[in-house]
Length: 458
Image (cartoon, rainbow, N blue to C red; front, side, top):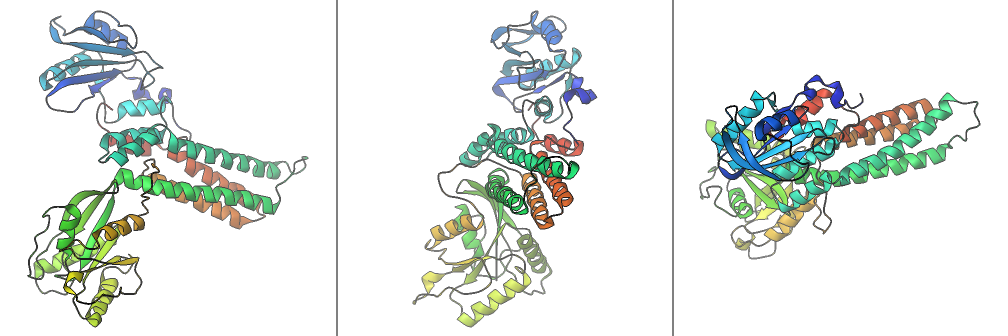
């Protein structure tokens, strides 16, 4: 389905108003208004239509012609505005009562209170932003680290969109040519030889995979990652939790089974927001509370982006091997974990790293801090996070899903070989998946879900 325009959606013709600054008291508060009634409203409120893009100091008048507030008005006639419509901002004092009175005045004059994200939605529908840029705007507002903010800004400036648009143009060009050889077999066309066609499809497939790599890290910048600490009781999970968070997040005692529930904490590692979760020691227990904690631990492991299994290095090698095998069977059957051999400060001789079906293994001491730098570097690597100077754009999980769909379609088109009708159909599916990323093809339900998560007034 083609992207709808503002003219196609009846409620987009309404004039909307909302606070554009956060709730609470502040030195400055802004009420933003967008739509066809903007000039009528501003005449009623300040007795004039101010000059475009020029700050005008004036009183904001109520229906009784008494001043509600005094501040600055900025007028942006459409289409040269954020929304593409006539837009005005009343910048006054940030008292909640004053701003409520001003917003109520906008409603009296014909505006309605905007829904969350409706200003950005209008910018998208009026071709001022594509969908990835609109999402990047929300990511910029919600960014929790400098790297995330820089990544969001790159997406807002169109870096991600440009990659998708360039790739999309190549897909469309190839699809048009393939369909031409099908629809006009008698014309003097130079059909692509099978080898040339496969080569071009291979280039497109490689580019999708590279964008997927970048977008994967971009999604971590925007949405963060989940890291779960698992292991047997008294292995040192809570000690590692406190080391990674830099504070006494989890209770530490010599009593096995101290942690009974999930303990979460947000941290930043390499500029990436991580949610670290400490879990109950995984073992068979007749204690109902502890058994529930173990069940929650196993569930948390299954949904994690990265699992760190903590093993007590002071145990006999045979016991360590048995514990690791049990944990891999009971908790990490489908999630290759990072193995952390803890308490190496209590061992007199060097400890050889265990071998097995897991992502990596690190020796460390939560007591002395030995090995923690290596652990954190390994964590970043397993999460697919580059530590180089390159700044990444932000992305969303839905972008990754669409890119995987596009990659699958290209792979299917290569497998189709000489069946040009199938090649063309898979290229069409690839084009549709890529177009959904920037919103060139969209679904109303998807747009509603995306913009409903924005701030009101944005």
